[in-house]
Structures are given as C-alpha cells and as structure tokens.
Length: 437
Image (cartoon, rainbow, N blue to C red; front, side):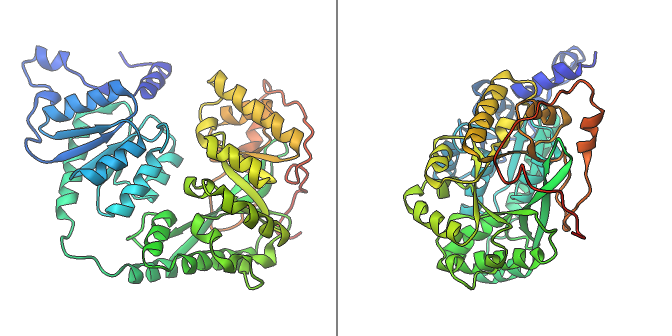
C-alpha cells in the first residue's frame, strides 16, 4: 500500500530509511544492508542530531563495509573532520548550533575537494539549490532508499579518489577568476496583502568552480589577505546594477565580517554610497554577530551615511537577539528555520507572532524569509507578517522583476482572513513602484 501524503511527510521529519527487508528475505535474497557492496572502501563521517537516525546510518553503512564516524551537530562534526581522515561526509541540514550549511562551509575552508552529501527531510527545491551552490556533491531527501544511499556513497568515494593529489594553483589566481565571473540575482521582497514588490535581496554567486559560494570565496581571500578587495568588487558589481533598479525599491545587500572591517565601506568613494537611501545592509553570519562590541560603532557610521541596517536570522539564537538590541536595526528577517512548516506547527506560530508584535511596537520592519508555500504565506499573514520573501512570491532573477507572482493566489483563498495591522516601518508604507516610475 502506498503511504499517504501525511504519513510520507511524517517519515521525512523523522528521517526514516526505506529499508525493505521482509520481501527480500521471503525470496531468499540478501537485503541491501546485508550486501557487501562497499567492503573496505573508506571512512565516512555522518553528522546527524537525531540519535536513532545516526544509529540507522551506522548500521546500514557498516553492513555495506564502510567505517562510520558520527557526530551529533555541526560543530562536533567539524571538529571530528579536522581530527580524523575521512573519505566523504553525510550531513543533515537542520541541527542545533552549527547547521549543515555552516558545516559545509567549514569543510570547504579546510578541504575544498571533500565530497559532502546532504541528507534532509526538507523537500523544497530552494534548500537543495542552496546546498549545491555552496558545494554539496548531492542532496538526498529523506526517507532514503538504501540502494540509492549505497550508490551515492560509492560515487562520493570515487570522486574523492579521483581528486588530484598535486598542489592546487595559488588561490589568488582562482580569486581573480571568481571576481571576473561574479553574477548577481535579485529575489523579490513582497508586501503580500497588496501583492506589491517593495524590495530585492541581492544574491551573489560566481562562475568559478573553485568556490562553492561567496562564503568560500571570502574564506580563501582572507587566507591570502585580499578579503577587502573581494568585498569591494562585489559591492561595485551590485552598485552597477542599481542604476537600473526601480525607484523606491529597497535592495538588501549581505555584509560578511570581512566587509564590515573594510574602511573603504565608510569612505566617500564607496560605490553603494550613491544609493544609500535604497540600500539595506544585512548582517547575518554567526561570526559577524558575535563581534557586537566592535559593530556598534560601525553601525552608527553606516546609519550616518544613509544606509539602513537589517539583522538576518531573527529568532535563531542568542547572538541574533543581542544584535537586535545593540545594532538597533530598522529591518529584521525572520529565520528560515522558523518559517518552514509554520502553518502546521503551533509553537512556531506563537514565536513568530510574538516577534511580529514586538517589531510593530518598536516600528521595525519584519520580513519572513524562505516563504515557499501558500500555506506558510497565509499563516504568516494571519500573524501580521505582511513582508515576505521566498518561492511563494517569485524566484531570484538577473533582472528586477516587477511582476506580481503567486501572491495573487491569496486573493482567491476565501478562507483566509487577513486582519490589518498598523506598523510604522518604512517598507510597510512603501509605495508601489514600476520601472517607468
């Protein structure tokens, strides 16, 4: 019997494996877990916070002939990776402390050639795309078929052993190619009740295969002492695009720690300074937020130049909440992990509702990031989270799209009752714009 959608979703959340043993044993054939496909073929690091799932990985992969090391979160996984010699890594995404994305970035800094397999219960295309962009070899969606797992692990080991042993070229050459191949896409930020695009998130990438994303690029640049140059090149690239941005649109630009430390950001020659009234500078990386004592003064300088500040990942931990207090941002972004499945998890709705209420009282704009379904969009609207960003409202594009995407479907949902809420934030009051305005 085929599982129902509800049962399937529950299995994904629990991270179950699809280990079909009864039929195989009735027919006298060995199960996948009993087949010696991978005898003596390598060492695997499994990073998984669910103990039962980690044990299942160990049981299945050990039976396939692999040596298996396990860690319960991203920080422990990174420490184990640096201490032990492994041939491939299998990691969950949603974990306490450092999540799978942070672990992936940490592994890339130490060993750019290490194959990393992401196994997650999240089925959204956005999650898989981000993991691949940041350097994951493959993304598996739970529940995982044992046969597929065996094939993927074998492939990862082959990829690892094909990696050249010779020293790689000097990082500076790869960095120069990465800067020459910079590409920026813009994801719309929407006022959902009105179906109006009020801003865009600048998402920076590169065509250079040596780097899985801008975080890896900055990490390499810091090692050779040119992180400031990378930051300037990225900001100049975005500034060039802003000459064609719709008037009134807010452009969200992420600032890593290396960029905040660059004195050029605060000088009159800074390319983004000409668009300061439009630009919202996002502070999000964990290592950046933990330097709050240094950031407070710098934040005042940026505000004096006309920039607005945004704290990303609101609700994800103590560092982000401390940043909210000390940096006094005009915009905060609700953490994607809190938004995901908010329509079905009451605890998440209560937390998001409390944050929305606090932001309204303080006159701070709250943007829900990672809104990928109409159900999440509707639940957020009921809580007063009108500003949203995610696949439910449109994909990132190289141009500044002014088309109202899937937001119109909300008007056809008669069961959804949106109660108006007053907020003093500038984005909530932003006028509708078009390219001609």
